[in-house]
Image (cartoon, one colour):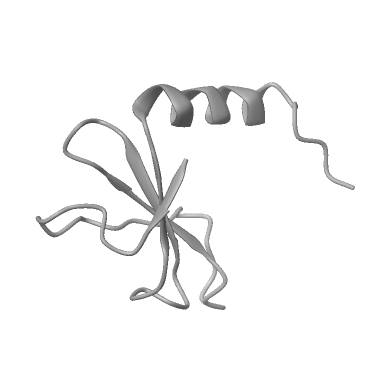
Length: 72
């Protein structure tokens, strides 16, 4: 993971989950040209962006599905 404010030179298509409400507290994701993913806070679209290589993001999603990150 690497924080950045500009993940690439081409515009990204940002999407959020269809489960997101209209309260503005959402995480948006975009596919990067190299297959990685970028994440940002929907409340601050011009703010910081976290970028992940494809294998890093896939490992995170697999861990979430497998319950590796229990809620406190």
